Length: 253
Length: 364
Ligand SMILES: Nc1ncnc2c1ncn2[C@@H]1O[C@H](COP(=O)(O)OP(=O)(O)OP(=O)(O)O)[C@@H](O)[C@H]1O
Ligand SMILES: [Mg+2]
Image 1 (cartoon, helix red, strand yellow):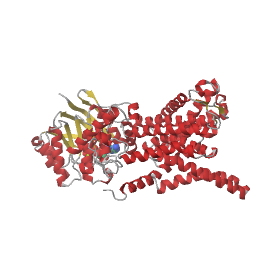
Image 2 (cartoon, helix red, strand yellow):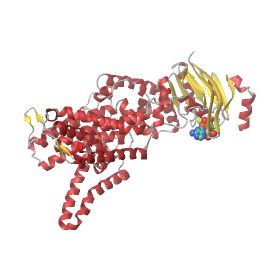
Image 3 (cartoon, helix red, strand yellow):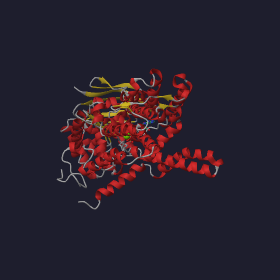
Image 4 (tube, each protein chain N blue to C red):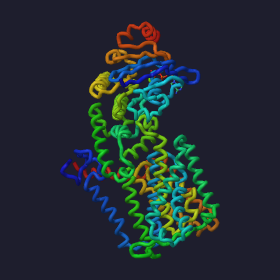
């Protein structure tokens, strides 16, 4: 059973415990959400999985493979893609180029082929473009294809961020607040996309999201973080009736 | 695809293969071919003096070197102030071998294409080594690393007997199908060799930029965190950029050695490195066309400064020293002016002009 296993992960910055003893089991083919108040450590957890941070202690395994000390490009090659909370797009490039860049690891041709742009390189690049176009189609970004990313509205940039992660053709996708800053309509679209990513593309989703309504609706499994600790987990009902979770959320308001 | 591949004002591709074309319309390609033909045939009609022929050859050599620097600086966003040293590596690959096996050895005189490629590889090796710090270091540190390479290069050439302590090492005249290339045809012969090299390397760079190799450079320049998440190794991409830069520099250097009939250390100093930087910035960082405009503009500027210095020297002999200082000063000035007012360089003017011509007169 392919899955992601986070075992007893602790991450400290100086004296600050961003994560302490986090355990998480992400099952393949499902949508697993991570919720929690601001500063709870959600992004830090994603950073540990995707290799931007390395846990101070604890282990992370994916399908039995150890990710604890891997760097981001290694994690990405294993098949785990990431969309960032704070946009990390190639701002000066077009939407198309941003997505083409994400195909890097799926392209294989040598330097000499590339220099001559002949044979394999040219064929692979054309197929590549086709793949990218499929994603643009799916995420409904046709209208922005050739526009410079930096000039697009925040909501659209968020979509591009998700589209780019999808272009990596991953088995698992980490989405860090993909709906933050979107208007209602964009939000509804995004929820639909996430559903399709799970059902049609058969990609395992880890979703960090503040909108509890959305989370309760679409998640198969939810983890609640507070001050770097998992205070509750389970399906929507279990989490909603967990007194610790209620306290944390009421305490926040 | 539109029926008219001559005057298309937009794009009408129907397959992605069509979009891969370098020239989207027949007209573009025709203009390019005419342009290129003009470069090949003008010497049959115009007799340029040796002095200007040399300037032209030097521009073409600089174009090849700037291909390399632009890949590092423009596309990779990495500063390198030691580019002339890499060019020097290429030149000294040829010159020191000529010193060892004799300047008239067959390998030097007949095997010159091999020597040029070999010098390119040597440049690439040095590029990779000097680029290694890019695995970890950035900006200011990288500047120091490349500057150190420039210094070490100058010191090595200047002190070792093997390199004749920086004094001129001769390289023999090359042979071509018609026999030895004599004194009179020397500059014209190299003009053609250089032109062909510029075209081949130009297509090479153009192709590289539209494949994963070129894209990873740009990705690392724009956002290396994201590049990392996209499965690229940011450090390796940077080292690779330095390797490529070294390769083009090495080729340029070997050709410089053949053109000058030898190598001396003063052709590859920090001053030349700054000059390459000026060419890249003025031409347009991250623009392939910039690789042509930059060297032409700077060489012409240099020529004008030389005239100015001569003229000043005539009028005021005591101002001669001041006038020689004018050249480095002028490079510094154009770098600053372009960075301030036209960071996209002359290539941007070209782009604007082209867009204008393409829509003229409203072809719809
Ligand atoms: N690089 C860092 N250096 C120091 N402290 C950090 C660093 N990254 C995160 N932190 C701290 O770790 C804690 C958790 O941050 P994190 O970004 O993971 O929270 P979050 O749950 O994603 O919050 P939000 O909902 O606001 O995105 C915060 O207190 C934050 O200040
Ligand atoms: Mg966060």
